[in-house]
Image 1 (cartoon, helix red, strand yellow):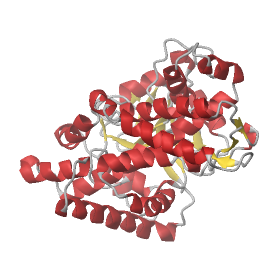
Image 2: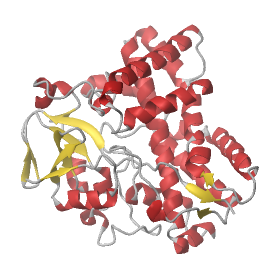
Image 3: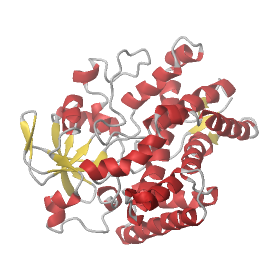
Image 4: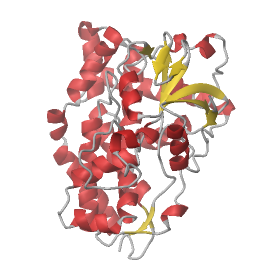
Length: 402
């Protein structure tokens, strides 16, 4: 099996995803830092493996981890071993840790956040409208980033004063270019910051999910301090990064497909279609790290060996022709059906999917209603990906608002 090295600079994610698909449903890959693992790259096989009880989250199953081959200063250590939370356990422990979060993020409860999301969106658009006419704007920094960060922070009870430090630390957390000597301190700083937030909520609880997690632990649900801190970090990280990329990628897709942009702006096609097609075609999450095989697992005509690591390559899955037909490589907001798994599948499916969809569903139509003549300020081919193996993210999105 030929090993495919994932580009730490993410210069050509589409090309890399195509090579992964061509390698078959199970591809042998090399993560930045020379770490070997396998990737599931086809839709059907991914659905199967994501519900296979032989594929677990316990890093101690990983042969390379047991042999001491994964250094603590590996740039992706925070994604491979982020501490105990619902992300890293299975079975009864996973259900215990996930229950409160899932209850807070049901579609019905998330819908109650709509008015607040609309108000935040309007405030962001007002700030954009107040800028000097003709000035180039970084739409990611000025619009796509503040909305999800403010929403998830309010949900979790995180003070906006912590946002600059969170942004700085998460930039290092996700980047493959973080110098190894800075990784241990970055991980420690994240832990210190989130511990401070949890301690503050323990002293002054509020109407937020962090306070609810603390209360649950005190009422006999047996959440440890480590589990509460790591769950808060997980939700903040996933709750804003995915939505930023979804909004940015949708804008780029619409700007590079003007006929389809006309269809949605005229009301011929609903915004929901834009969101779902963006999730499939230019998914916010390129690869999810990391699961481990407790025994040999057959995947198509190949075998994922016992003790080996598996990543899920969502960038490859979204354009799998076996699932989405011969036009899988095309952006098409009229696509029906559109059965992607961009938010995962099985027990670990993203509990924040409804919230991310709602935020994009409010932000995108409001943006184009306010600025219908919005244009990219540079050709799409000149937009630069950030060096993040897990997130399909841009450095910036320069636009002219018109």
